[in-house]
Image (tube, rainbow, N blue to C red; front, top):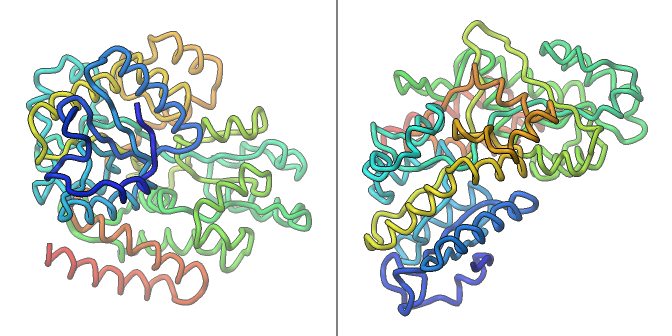
Length: 418
């Protein structure tokens, strides 16, 4: 097992298309780009090591390549330079760009022959499909949840029960900031992109209509959701400004006890639990519409179509291992990401955590209103562009309706190009 950063890629030159490993072991060594650091990265290391021990003929050269956005950017640059990996983690709304262009292998034939297909939850299979074919197999699946700091709530004299409505979330943020703001405690973390998508869907809307493909980022319900989120930053001033331009800053503030609440992926549960211990509370997100839903997030493993068949077969063996009940149990117990295998919770390691810690059950129980999001090529452009649009709105540089209307116009033009 080799775990290194993509800085090492600069040392690799003269490679044939699709080959980053040495000629001597090209058939047994596969490069795998991923996005897991911290505690999640350590959990991945343990799984890779176990796979290699069971399959000594295969070496997984696992490279941390940055966040989901970074991976897309680096993969786009690596493909024409013929320096792409053999396998890659791709976020569940961004892989359509690569599937559309023939970069990813259709994994449907592999899935049809593998018994693991029957064990995966329907949501896990669905989010890996684009135009009727499976181009990724989900590994880390999530929904956003509402994290809160029990100690801060107690000091401010507020009850978590209020978090079952959006009005209650707003009122709680105002109260806590009013009482503890002088101590450097913020009422709530500014919404990150996953949270923004969640609030939009919970308000009965989306970025794109999943049935018609129409871009609806400028719909009244989407505008209303963004106005509600913007108020925390611009009008109520109960947040720090730092996470508006750097989402990692928000996570640091929350784990450092300087934010009372944060809407983040359940994939953060492992790290947050380690940082805050029993002071960490987890609540489901309130529903604000008859048609409300929460987005399924996370990513899956894809195989580059240009590599040789032997490597594809080796990577599929790795994918099958990673989605097995035992591997998924360790991943769930270590990180907080959702179980994707129906048999995961039968494994002692997962069952012990699930039964002992109610916080692990929140996202799982929220799956009743969870659904996949649109994944055509334009979504990748929209997600990259939306960060700048949000900054302009949250920092008061543009009005919500004006910014989202212009954003939607540009998105429709981009979709037409695609």
